[in-house]
Length: 369
Figure (tube, rainbow, N blue to C red):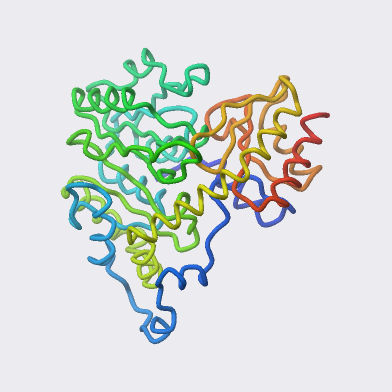
């Protein structure tokens, strides 16, 4: 099948290991294997484990550990994937057919449009509005989600705004999907990365057609093991497993074993607390930097996640701005056009303080010019 270029991911993979400062990241600085050993990963005993294939949909132990975080779910509701993005991909592959409609919020992580269009579906977006705290434009939402809509894709907490939907908004979205027979695909990989607010509520349990995807990359701070998952009705999990068999087959054995340790309730809370500590330390640094621009750079502070979405004044396209920062400052950032919102820049907040300050200084020198 023909598929369009995923512009943001291609830009990052091309330049993130070439520039001096990668400020395009989206999670906190990662945990080390040593820190995971301190959480209970038995590296010494694993050294003698034959590196054969692991269970392709995730071991029973891992799926049961994940299911424990979703009330009413069992191992049969879980499909373990290579990252959250593969979980999203599996849902689309298993459910979409040519002629189907897909709805999604914007700005967003822009994986779903390319996947859906490659499968012959039509994509309709509805805006999240900065003036209302990034709540949906409800008129656009009602037009986008209809009885013809097969999947509604959203991220909550949102990538890239860091906003969290209100309880009322979540209920309204879930009820609409029940009425229209639409799968509600909620990407919740940032759940647990809240900075100063209470834990984000999951869409899980708000309807019979809710599918949640998540993983270890963002709130857990363990992106390198490439473990994600989807939680949905057993028939959907099974259909996704069928698709998985044709692609990556399953996660690797060491990643599965590490993930079993990470999703233990006490370790999950340790990971979330570490993420919160990093972000609470870094947010005032970013706030002071943004305030130094006056009204030429503005934002709504993120409620969750390690990214800031900045609106800048002037007419320069965001891709041109990002390219100028990369070429002149050897610093990589994400243009707003890559997340569905022109006139904005997405900047990383999850690094060490010295790295963050220097990265912001370099970006600022171009914004000021």
